[in-house]
Length: 371
Image (cartoon, rainbow, N blue to C red):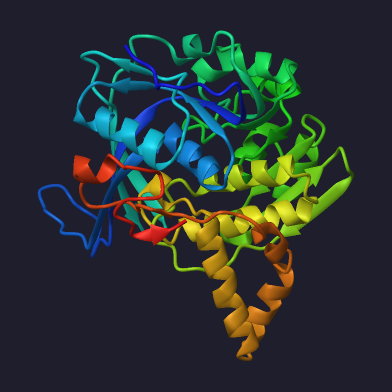
């Protein structure tokens, strides 16, 4: 086993979980059927799983620490290099395991949704053991729908040390909606389910009722509603807000929720008002779904700056919808002031040449998009 060379004393965001090698197919002429072969127009590969969150937070400039197991196979080598060298994620709490193969997921993105096929085995050492004790951090993102995460004590320890815990729970395929998750929220700052999950866990029949029920359990309750936008209550400030989704042509929703959460964390640690946080998170997730490949679809400040220039240009050209959007996002110039933009790789149809991934510096490489 080995670790990355340097460890940060503290982080903006601390994450733990499983990293998957993701292969994403897009552009299906029709859904695949048994006994047939379908040729698609798009394909990309990228680190997935918890790496979606790690890349999303790091690209927004948050110092990100990741605790995860990596295999010593080719996939593991490539993902370790991409996350550490290209995406600047601190892997000092991660481990390489000999003869443990990397979990793999194949994602089929069709009709604004996706189906996934995954193969993998538990790592030789529980991820929670890599965070005993956890380093100092300003925020933690935890999936309470994962029993291993719920039972692990590291994120509660981080909360005791002052970290803000942003929790999600994910879809319950049995739709039993374990009420113990609501009890776990006592140790959390924020809960960010989608509307179906929120209504399931709160036993309510509308997103608005679910939101108010969750506000009794956690200081920041946020419910995402897909194309209908997002609603939220910040009990600490008394703010309640609703923000519409941006209309975009989505090609792959993989990782969009992770990008939303990353942007929400950024706005929270910067102490932005609730509506500003939600608008910024909605923007970042809308930029992500226009790319494919999960983690490598996450936007950075360069993508946000490009979007703002395009909106302002259309608004100045007389586009009323663009002018309305520009007014809603008039806070962006202040956010962009002084930020550093850099070029990074998007998902490609291969895992790339190692000469490409072995970057001489984080700002050098075969860029296909700026972030």
